[in-house]
Length: 241
Ligand SMILES: *Cc1c(COP(=O)(O)O)cnc(C)c1O
Image 1 (spheres, rainbow, N blue to C red):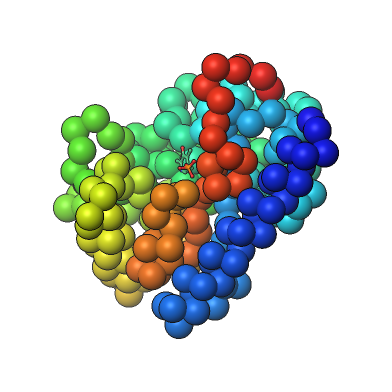
Image 2 (image 1 turned 60 degrees about the vertical axis):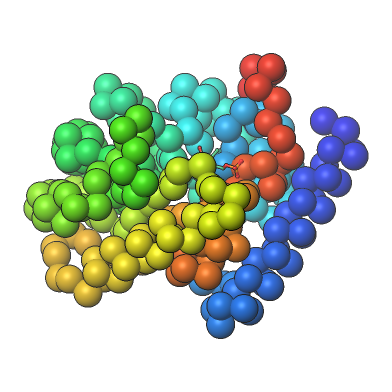
């Protein structure tokens, strides 16, 4: 990694911080109430470490194998590690004990498997419920109309702690953006906070990516997940870890 690449990441993060300041100011919110998670997929352990040295305190990985490979290389040292990608049930066991939060629980079955693996290790796993807010056929996540029955079932499992909701809205329409989806998520999140379930401690609404995080902040997001804005465009041609 060159000095220039490190400086680029550093200025990217400074730029994000000032955009967060502006967006929170507009929304009458405190920037301290929003976690900046760096979505680290396709970025090498060295690049992840560079971002952490530039102040990133929370990393999100998408693929279990990539996470394990980089974990071996101490890529995430100095930061909190979370899982944000599609998760196959047979790989859950590799994550327990390594990630503080599994953000992408999009089915009751997956939640049950996580609960079982966590119980085996005598631990409680924090999770977010992923909501398929755009009602997209091809996307995982719980449909909004099924959210509270899903939470009711999973809240019975004491080796899980539900910390809130996560969403990846559809690719935004250039004119309207994703604000309507973010507002729906905000309503669901407020509803969740107003209800009283066991094993639920809702303090996280994870939404907003590189192209729309200011809108997400305006709609109450408490965690934005940024890849491109932190690291620059991902090079899908290289498989370097
Ligand atoms: C890659 C990814 C992000 C970040 O995407 P950018 O548009 O690069 O900021 C956020 N969330 C999830 C789940 C991702 O996979």
